[in-house]
Length: 75
Image (tube, rainbow, N blue to C red; front, side):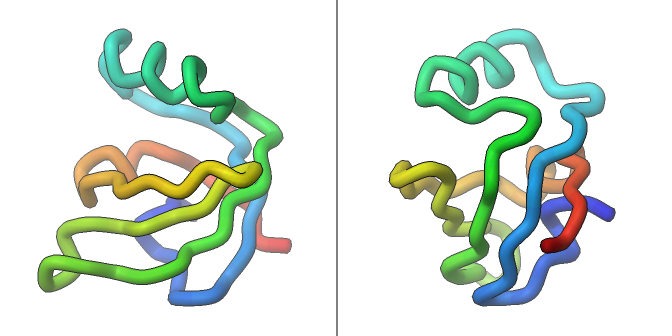
């Protein structure tokens, strides 16, 4: 299951990053997002192309292309 398949309000744990560019992975780690982090989907924006998420008190938007590469396990 990926972050792109979550529904608004759901929580999950990040289990794996697959095929993310090194620069994007580094940006995620810089703001404290890593495997094992708990993620909550706050909203889906821009006709399903942006995912507004909250991870450990950090709110950010991730494009659908990146969300499809972040594997999760629902809580």
